[in-house]
Length: 370
Ligand code: ATP
Ligand code: MG
Image (cartoon, rainbow, N blue to C red):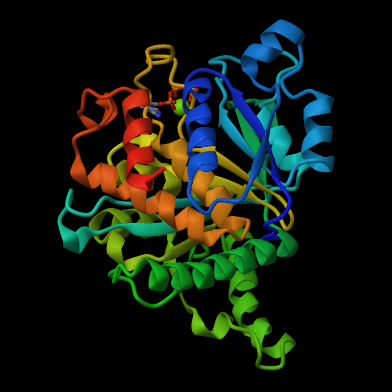
């Protein structure tokens, strides 16, 4: 993908709330990072507020532009209405469907020096993003014993296999990045942990587990021994003990791959380990498109005050670059952010500081040498 001559076109959807404050920061950091490719940022409308004004949360033109013109995208945050709103479906969900972004990749990285070094967390959660309970096939019926509601949970071999492959690719890419970053991370060896509940749900979670496990075995067979997945260690965790161990000994996990619902819960739990949602980044990835997105929501309680932490967005921008193949500038951004966090003088209120969004942007740009 890396092509130095042509500007990368990135669709920018700040959407709602603090998304509008933090996404522009990510944009400026990306464009000022030394060694970054040339960018052309294309502002695109989307969001709940847009829906309340126009009846459309994700305009056709936004989808068309992303599909036909953009090399990648970034999304800010969308307000979630507290009750069901007729005709509304989240633009993020629509984007995932339209662009076939089947993987949500969420690194959870601690800050050196702010925690017991033994409890260093540097993990990536790879969440399947298209099925499981999220196919939203629910029924409710009146029975003599009262109402009974049911939900169908879909796990397919195809979706489980492709998310499994993604997890192995992420593990190999991380191994490479680790060696270049030069931080002797507690986890030296690339590893994929398959998270499931096959002891109870032997059919659905059983299929997920078998499909992911088969990815490693089939890789060396199909590539006549030339595949690299054999370099990646593989183990598994039942989801409940996974959560327990994530809090007790986060340092043992490298890449964790999970079906949609477990992935959702795990990734929020993991975010709690690093101190603030304002630090946690993600990308939504398909086979040919990457969209960066901070994990937090629109944070209406602090929106408009200029104090939202922009680091989640800045890291999401770097993550998008990394997954597009531009690892050098991505590494520079990660290092600059780590530097600012470690120094600890310029922190927004969610991290116990008094700095503004703007202050953090300046500090990151300074650390970048921009
Ligand atoms: P939404 O419905 O859009 O998800 P929410 O009220 O659930 O909104 P979140 O954005 O999910 O809000 O955030 C949860 C909490 O974390 C809020 O207290 C919010 O202020 C805080 N928070 C989230 N992101 C940030 C950030 N980037 N900087 C500072 N605080 C944040
Ligand atoms: Mg929220």
